Length: 127
Image (tube, rainbow, N blue to C red; front, side, top):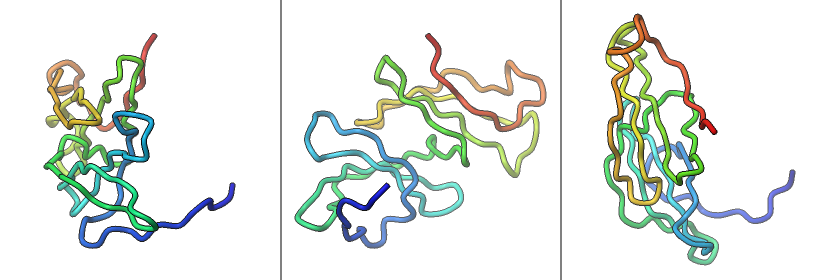
């Protein structure tokens, strides 16, 4: 409910899209940035004084889920379901499992192959 500390935002990385925890309890973390409607990058981030420092980035368009959440489940993996805005119901919509720290990812299924007229939706962790 209050601002604890302000940090300067890295320039020319795009709009902040997601924030994921780092590999340890350190102040490092991973963030995704949108550069355009369909281009997302996943970047290693760290604090350097009052600035956020952007480290290595890699393309991560599989994270482009519109406003749908990308849960990190008890297995430590994240799950993202791409939006299909612009291509309409029944079009390709891959469900992707990803490691939020490394960005390694695997497409589990394309929803259009199992749900008739699929359109958007979201993902949640099961028990």
